[in-house]
Length: 202
Image 1 (cartoon, rainbow, N blue to C red):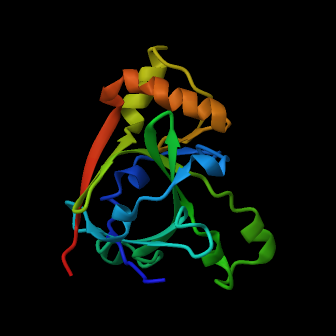
Image 2: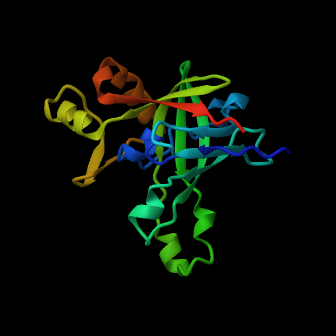
């Protein structure tokens, strides 16, 4: 299988910087997963973050591996790598496309992390709307945590959640309920932040 590389900045993937995550995937039904060949390749966001997207063999192209390279991370901290690795699926829920991104846990193997500690790491899911994916651009929409908390506090919307700390909100709805809530959330477009990725010319 031909390898495709997608370089994407962590900031570029607004989805991953939104600090709103889910305990559960958006779907556990493989029939909801779709393949979009346009997603494959090398991308960049407005902050020069790069994303490398490829498919994982043996899954009919429906499971992607994404490497996100954030050049600013190497300047900001010596504690973390400038590259993050995620497993990504695209789910079609009632005609709407969602990206479900979670850390590639195998990357923890043999990294000075004991087995007991590794088993205690809970992979959470970054879920965002895939507005459109075309040959040279990808449009995404992620949830803005502060705007969403305001919506919750005003009791205009409800979803099972836990505020892990002041910066991280975790949805705890199971997949079916999560799907319904994310679709219902479309009534409040102001809580979403949009981002466009462009294909990086090789």
